[in-house]
Amino acid sequence: MNKDTLIKEAEKFVRLSVSRYDSGHDWWHITRVRKLAGRINETEKLEDPFIVDIAALMHDAVDSKFYGENSEHRYKNVRDFLGKNSLGEIEERIIHIIKNVSFSNKLKTGDLRDPLLFIIQDADRLDAMGAIGIARAFNYGGFRNNIIYSPVEAENKHSTINHFYEKLLLLRSMMNTLTGKEMAAERHLFMEAFLKQFYSEIRLSE
Image 1 (cartoon, rainbow, N blue to C red):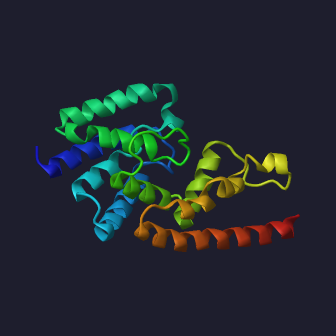
Image 2: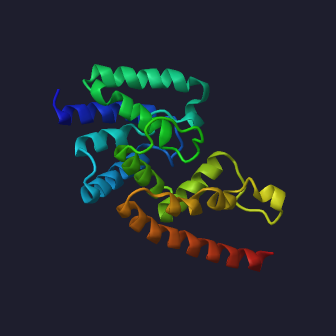
């Protein structure tokens, strides 16, 4: 099976995998991460572009936020897909990416110095920053019925605005590649400007 056919099969598999996700983690998120990963790798020249494309496609194939207790079964499906499509030689690297790419995964294992992980992590983190990151944050907050903001500290802990401080504003310092760092700097500034405007408007309503 040639590489173009393998990519098309992976696209079909991933489209089905993310069909139950919210619109911040959907096929268009995958598409953006693929493009970002390709751009990072084109500059950094760390990996085979084909492997980067497959890894970017597959990086969210098992998201515990949406699969929960079915996650292990989904990992089996991923392994079956990779083996069936002559991708067994990169199976462990792909599984490693899926298990370690997430910001929220505190129990990271395996080779955390893998350049493939660096690329996909940076691309995924960039999509959580800037204008798109802000849109995704509020979309997911709505999906979970979280409040936007509260002046009451105990309530605000569960707000989307607080998510900026728990995750989004931390991402700039967590980038792996020079290209990722440069792209993250601009997106970080945009988020800071958004928060400045947000608080300015909030003060007028209090």
